[in-house]
Length: 327
Picture 1: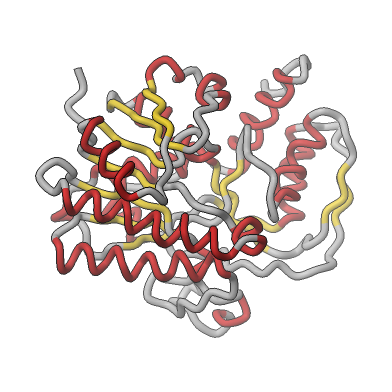
Picture 2: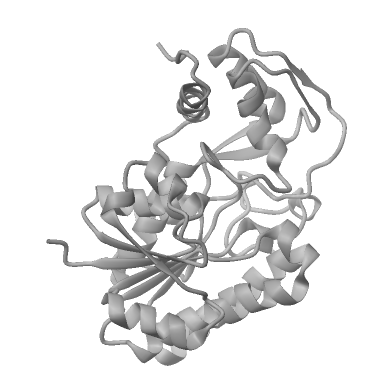
């Protein structure tokens, strides 16, 4: 019998399913709250039978309160959001889901304050300005800290910046315990396509014997394996309040250039056919200082790039009916 029940909004999506699986593996009760009740990823992760899936919509304030109250959730991991491409295509919907949806979660936690102990939620590295703004800044090692310039250039990033402000106010004025995380882009099996689909394709195409060409060769990317993102949210949900010095934390995996990542894929998949060019410029700030998350949340990535790629490749090959390559 578990003493904690965690309601995960967006809990049947890519990251949400891995968060649910990680929580189950650590003996927490889990409710996946999502507009989609498709359990495909949960099933692939082997935890569908251990997760209570509840259909719902974060834009409906009464439904959010009802879901939290009726499930007895002691913690909420709030992941539901429209990402960059969807937000650009439908700005009003993005404001509804990302901003109002987050407010509905925070309000539910305030209203049910004797029940809900913590809201851990997804901010994003998209709150930062483009990389050029930090080339002479950051800390002494050149890493971007949580206190550096926040100036997003996308609507998605702007919604996350606003949510950082409202989460802080709910903590300071209403006593709601909140922890936000600023991850970059997660990679791993079952990731949906999107504006950064080329990152998935760099692994997915070679894994099944298809050639792939990619730009941005000498530019650094944060390769954060999805299982590490999941453990970060678990730690954000359960780290005691007394250990926290802030309300938002950077989290990162392994920083490597596209060319270096291609080299890893070629090491894992010896017959990979990858063409890397130096064209183009990535818009994201990736070099995040994670010392606060390490010291206060106990966050230590368990997957370096090669381990993540190997696991990813083996899952893809198994699904395609091919032999694994890891030895």
